[in-house]
Image (cartoon, rainbow, N blue to C red):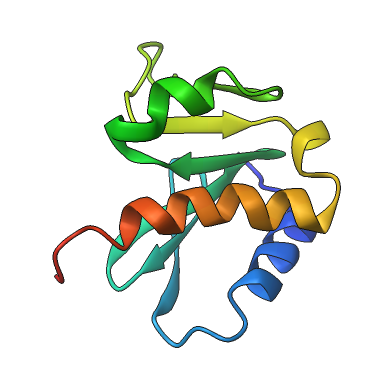
Length: 109
């Protein structure tokens, strides 16, 4: 599966001042790792976010958000954001911020 290269470039811009970011091809798309932990990624044209269980239910209610169901079964703590929800750079940054909030709570790898 191909992923949206334009979205990848926009995500790189969000992370431009970080030195702990790595990219890894996963799920047929592209994942962005922060200090070894998956933070977000791209599947097709959708943004994939790792938000954790604590804020999952709240964020799932937001417009353009849906459960990540890559395997046909929803993965709790993982969201898809539709392209319309990240069309503006500010919205993209806000969504990625939610994933960064969660990933920053994880122990170092």
